[in-house]
Length: 207
Picture (tube, rainbow, N blue to C red):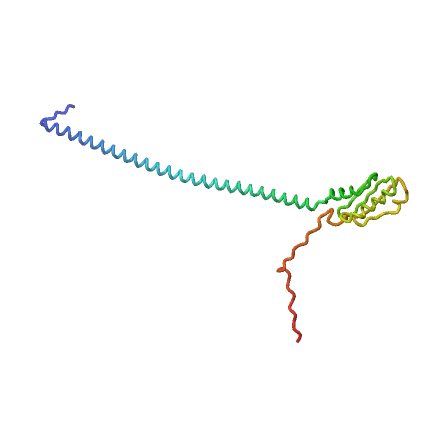
C-alpha cells in the first residue's frame, strides 16, 4: 500500500527532522543507559574483586599463622624431646659405674712380672676379687702393699696366708673393696628449705 504525503514541502521537512531528532534522542538515551549500566557493573565487579581479594588474603594469612604455629609446636616438641634425652643421658652417665677409673688405678699397682688372671667386682657392694700368678713371694707382698697403700681408691684388703706359703710360682687371691665415690658418685645431699621445717612449739610457762 502506497502512502501519499499531501503536506507542504516544508512541513514534510519538519516532520522528517522531528523523527530524526526523536530517533537520535532515543539512541543517545539508550547509549547513556547502557554506558551507566556498564560503569555500575564494572564498579560492582571491582568491589567484589577487592572484597574477595581481602577475604582470600585474610584466609591465607590465617592459614600461614596456623601453619607457623603447628611447625613451631612440632619444632618445640622435638627440641623438648632432645633435651629430655640429653638430660636422661647425662643422668645415666653420671650414675654409671666408672670402671675405667677403677681398672686404671688398679693396673698401676700390679708389680712387674705379676699376672692377673681374673678381676671380679660387684658394683653394688664395691667388693673386688682377684686371682693371679706371681713368680715370687716378694711380688705378691708388693702387690698387697700397693693396694693397701692406695687409700684413695681401695680399702679393707683381705690377704690369705696361703698367698705367701710358697717362695716361688705363687697362685694368689685377694679380696678388697672400692672406696665409696670412686666407682659410683656419692649422692648429693638434698637441700632443705628452712621455710618448710616446722617451727618448734613455744614453751608453755609453768603455772
